[in-house]
Image 1 (cartoon, rainbow, N blue to C red):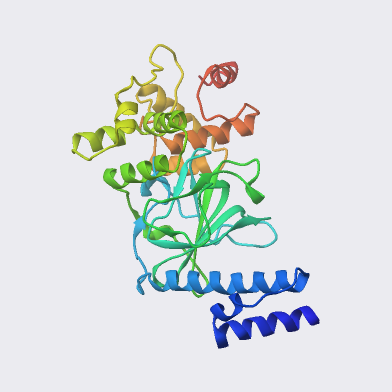
Image 2 (image 1 turned 30 degrees about the vertical axis):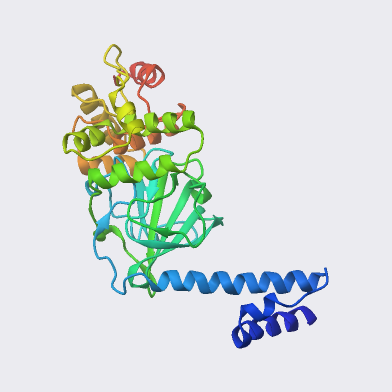
Length: 337
């Protein structure tokens, strides 16, 4: 009871007299003093957060990109709104399948309002967005290590990494993307845009700027550029400015699988088309159905990788999303490859 009373008095003093008055008081080293200090900090943080949110536009952003920086286009996404879930729930969001670790980014300007873990959503991030909407990014492998509550985000700024945490554990990695504004809203029909090559380059540069060790900067640049080489080649051809480390990563020879029958991100041709047709026919889950909506294009992208991981999980093969000897041998034993 005394603690509650103290907290009420503190909050009243903050609003009546201002935080400056409280700073001048001297408290003994006690639990009450700690609670007072914590209460003042929370009030200040809340006021700061509210000021940042108030700078966002009053109008919602009606159309925006899929919140995965690379490799997933609107055509790769299926409408999963209303799908049946356990405990008589229905799905309130859009599941976006992508390889584990894919970069989850903000599709609009936003303010980070919550970072945490939930039994259903696993590792999650909430942002407040224009028009008072709240965006929910769930099942993350982890939130971006430099992300903090109160951070002001631009489109393309990193939020976290695709995973399978929460009640998605052991399933195909994906991002659950939800929108809330006077109740849950279906995001699917609003995911119609794509990030420009220029914005993708800028977002990559921002990620690299947060890394301290030079060797880690180079390693991260190599990782991002090698997995998304076509994007950076297009940007380079368009004259988009890139940092020396990104240009260095782009200039390096791309690892090739042409000497083997292995297939991975970036592979193209008849073998990829055959693999896609097989994954669609096997239909091991939602990632296969997402791939089916795009069809067997002959281009090995994130949708194919997600469907391959889903298949590998279903048949007991290590789910790496790489079509190598283990998966090929399994399919040959069944006469399917």
